[in-house]
Image (tube, rainbow, N blue to C red; front, side, top):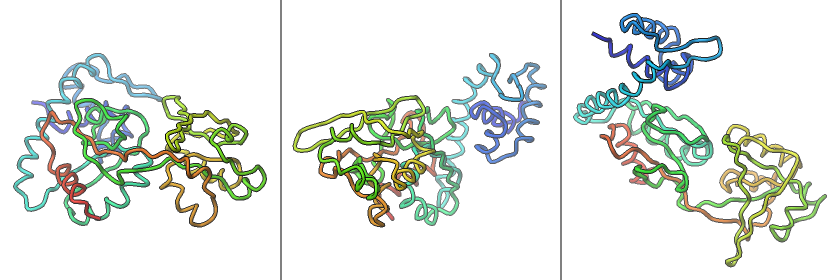
Length: 299
């Protein structure tokens, strides 16, 4: 008989791509996961991972096992979660995969109140700008914008329903180089840009009275969207150039005077993000509680 905890350890390592990351995701230890995988390999009589000092990669046998185990373990979790529904308050783990912007601008207004209301729930938030399969990543749900939602997902609005893309610069920079009056003026300015992990660098879009303008400004600094966004903000404050970012991210710097809005009448609005989750399986009790919480609009 296979130990269920050993199977879970194998899945955690395979999904995370390593023992340390698997330990962080599962709440265990790297040595414990390593021992569980060795025990499982001994019982099965096959190698499940090719290990080097730099990587841990599933073998063909490991990939086949992962493919069959993932839905089976999800069903086990769902079956156990049915019992959770009989508790006075849901308990268990909830894992969310979200963009950095949501972790910074959306969740701070929700998470403290949710955890206070449900002390039996342990919430883990993974901030990631990459497109991921939330189930394959071991997450219960994710937060994304409408254009990035995967098919066959149930989407629930979360956070402000209208956001804006803002541009800004330090007053000192604008005093030296002038204040743009039209989006096309940005082509003559130094701009701080962001690039997605995929390599894509989206154009800046502006809109006013039905006129839409898309430009690809240049500048001395390009940062990875998400992890290095704070560097871009600090560079703009220091006078490096004009930055484009969520209005909510820049608002505190407008209020302090460290940054000055640029081309505000042209700022483009877009719909707010959604919490999304697979609709093809039973919704775990902690996720159901989170969905109900945000639908109720509680602070």
